[in-house]
Image (cartoon, rainbow, N blue to C red):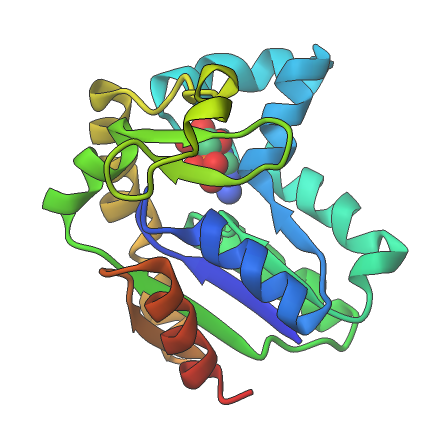
Length: 209
Ligand code: AMP
């Protein structure tokens, strides 16, 4: 199974991806997670990425395309993959197409998680992640247990200002890849509003397995 998750920041891609990779037994390839790990490790890539990420701006296509190209060569990604946060521009989608076609591989579906803009800012500003389990919470909508509250992390780019920039990039640069995949008959539109279990059920129904 090879899937792509597309949706605005805060649509629930990370939360839903974690559930689906378990169900389908495929690796979760999140360019955002890979870049955050590079920043934390202080690698050259991390140093380049940090400024873009804090500002909520997209990295240059060649940087992320190179990262994904390497990741897809790893043995665990040869049988299936869930790509989360990539591609995010038409050139990235085209580069992925060339990579997959070169290997004689096709995508099964592109899941488009739809959440209106006016819900995004409140979803993101209240978002917190547990660094120990990777679990994502929301201070109001999905409150964490009180005992783990002190260790939860607020992403540096989950500020209102950065979210507005990220939403702008989504509409200007990422949304244009939807027609690219619609032309291939791959897009499954899923309503991302509501509780996470209902959204998971909708995605599974849309995928039909
Ligand atoms: P995410 O965790 O997917 O929201 O990504 C966090 C940040 O990482 C984004 O705001 C970008 O700065 C950067 N990033 C992640 N994926 C990409 C991508 N495919 N293209 C460009 N920048 C990316």
